[in-house]
Every structure is written in C-alpha cells, then in structure tokens.
Image 1 (cartoon, rainbow, N blue to C red):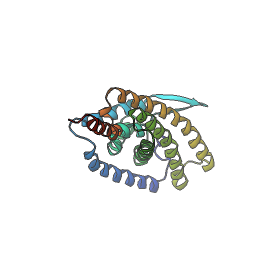
Image 2: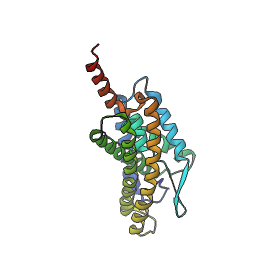
Image 3: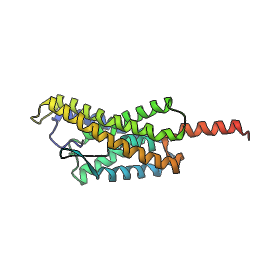
Image 4: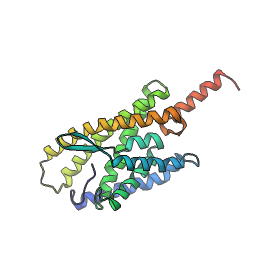
Length: 229
C-alpha cells in the first residue's frame, strides 16, 4: 500500500498532503482527550509495535506479500486521534529513513494508511461494539472486523486517486481488480493479527485498551448497583 514517488501526479499528491496535514493538526488537539499521564506511554508503544509489524511481510499468493497497516489496531488500543498521530510518525520515519513510501507521496500514504484505515476500522469497531453483547470478550472480534474492512476500503480509495492522477501506464480496471482482490486477502491477515493482539491485551490489561473503556465503565456501574458501597 505504500505509494512511491511519482506514482501519482503533483496535484493529487499535494491534495492528499493537505488532507494529511489537516488531519494531523486536528489529531494533535483531539488526542489530548484520549491520553493522560498513565496512558500517554501507550501511544509510543503502539507506534513502535506498528512500525515493527509493518516490517514483517506475509505471502498472500502469486508472488504478492502483505503487511500489517495497523490503523484499526492502533485506534482500538490508543484511540482514533492518537492512532492517526502514531501512523503519521511511523510513515514519516519509514519514508525518511527506510525509503518505504516516497517523500512526495507521504501525504498520500498518511491519508490512505494513517487516516482511512483508522477511520474505517474505528467506525466498524464502534458499530459492532454497540450491537454485540456488552462483554470484554467481544472487543477483539469487533477490532478484527474493523481491521478486515479498513484494508480493502483504503485500496479502493487508492484506486480512486489513481483514476484522478495516476502517472503509471496501467489500465484502471486492472488496478482496481488487483488492489481490491489482493488487499481483501491482506485484510484477512490484518484481522487475524489485530484480533490476536487486542485479545491478548484485553485478557491482561483491559484498562489499557481505549476501545474497551465504555464496557469497563458499564461493568463497574453495574457492580456498584449490585454491591452498594
């Protein structure tokens, strides 16, 4: 999913750069409501984990490999606004130090991986959290579903950007088919990783999972009503 330099034309790259900069600016202010002195270090741990996990590629067939994007995972663990900041930092370091994604395409990569996957993953997670049984055991499956949905949606958005400003001489239908097909498979891997990681953290320290906070608060409220203090 990392877009290289020159794959999209300058106007498209500039437009996504503006979107990315605006989203990061908003996230810098909004993340204050997600973090406190106790949970702030979690953001660094999440960013570090996503950075390391994105370095590991897994085969998906026909010589194609995929890797964790981490948008849904970061959103569930640290909160959606904090997740945007974590992914933006990861993508910036990758572009500057590891040539993974182009410098001129940084805005595009932040938009696709750091904004779209976070927004879609978090939206699906919140929706499922509302309709599924109100138990902590449901946090991991909801996070996995959000991760599964986020990857092909980001791939489709890239296809739209390519249709607007693509520089490579590739048929648009072929791009759409390949991107959606392979990224659906990659999304399955994303869902498995996200579900396992979230389940592990929920099992040990559910209080550190941002997406579990409403369920923990509701459980504590019920406990207080059953056992008056």
